[in-house]
Image (cartoon, rainbow, N blue to C red; front, side, top):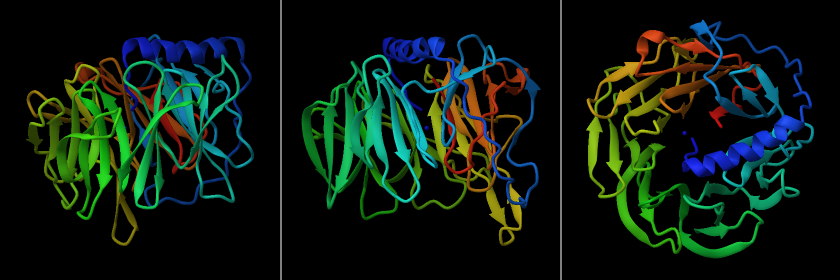
Length: 367
């Protein structure tokens, strides 16, 4: 679910990216992808609503085989500064204060090459292979986690690639987000699901055990949302505060399914949830996936209108202020929509962004 930084960090990242785009308007490659195989549910995925420009300043970062940056308010798309892909390569992109982290995969290898793109100050900075990268809450440092046999190494890395310090955790640890309370991380154990831990970012020492046997859905600046790793249907979502470890369970409507991803709104009022579509009757029928928004104050759950996804795929979710931005993908293209839970009567707006892509590896997030 989406990168969250302080406002100054966001401004720096946007300035780096779009200062480059303003002077480099090379066209984004728009190939003719092969025809998709027949679907058990023709027309999926789809967004249904009113076509409209995005609000001023809404730019989205597209990952996958055809990475690009789209300004939805003026119908403009451009390349990702500093990114060059070889034939068949794909990139999962994450904006960070120092630039853009690109996790690149390609044909003939299962390894993921991770680099930091710094278009204003030189060539890409290597960050290693099969790494998980989380930006520091303040400044431009990165937490770069790589897994070894029986342990995970976390390097606190400067924007030029220099390692400031390093610590090691036993087992498989995945940093999730740096917060004022500490570094939130998930660690795989013997139980179904993972341990959710709050760590000292400088040393890796545990400050608080948040939950055990859970599946993380979203991490915000003050809370983490998760579901039980052993629950099979109608699972409540638990939201745990990072500051004191207190939790609240939120029941979801019967038949909702299990959320695969989520995103807290910047003001902490809403939690968006993406539920993937499901196969039924031996994969002959698809029950479309959908998105919903949970009001964390009242517990009210509202389904986002006009969102349907394919089986085993949930909508991309990120926030632009009070507006939820959603992306859905087929084997050939993506669609982007926007919906504001504070103004539900406005309905879903379909934004002018339909990048080519592939269902499995493409995604879209607010920049």
